Image 1 (cartoon, rainbow, N blue to C red):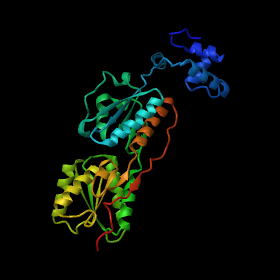
Image 2 (cartoon, rainbow, N blue to C red):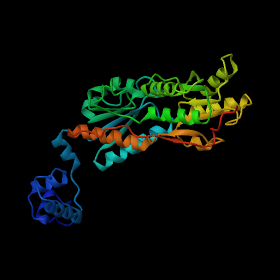
Image 3 (cartoon, rainbow, N blue to C red):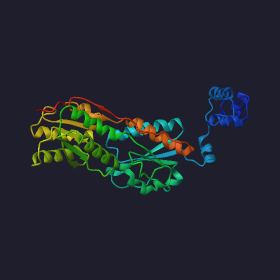
Image 4 (tube, rainbow, N blue to C red):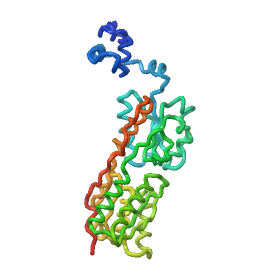
Length: 338
């Protein structure tokens, strides 16, 4: 048994459980199945708990040749969505003894400064949003085990892609508005060259076109309230055919800017024009009326991304299938006026 004041070792655990040190290593490394019995494994775990044993991760990492550190690359930290992605990823990482370094690409464009002398030496793997993919070149992150988030699975550089079912979100928005009688749509699209925004535009156009007599016009704006305000004002004051009764925004922040533009133009939400967003940020319920938006579960997104990377590192097959999304209907949408 461990002497008073000393840290218990795997040998102490082995003696307390009446097994070999090799068996302790198998059980505490979660590699015991098929090699020791369930009863023995539980005896080892109980002995470790009673002794307060904690594995020496530094020594274990040297044996494994791992740093147990993962890099999470996001476009920027200016939206709570990516904070949720980090929270979910860090939660799963912590359960497996990994740490997460967060690496934002300034304004979501171009690489941030490389924080590592050698990413390959400092990291075990990378999780990256497709909107921040350019940042990978600065750290040679694409040469490490890589999981891509929000990325086209047909052309991804990652070993695995993890996606929200964003196409279904666009279909849910279109179906909701069509059911309310809307036929003239304005799409306020994010001015970001990214797969996720391309999918939203394609699915929205396809779904709207299934109804007779519909029109769909698209304008782009930076993902900012001021950018959305300017783009919405310009779109609704120029000569451009029938005035839309529904404004579909790629992001809740774009919707907030659209609200300001509509009020300046004397238009009421939803009486004159219905508005939808994407993300379900805290901002969505701060708006008046509260925003109908597609809820994206950012924490689950981060959890799935980290779980996929850990599976890749262990040589396992990650969970398949896109993460479901949900349209949350609030006060910003109503039946189209005749």
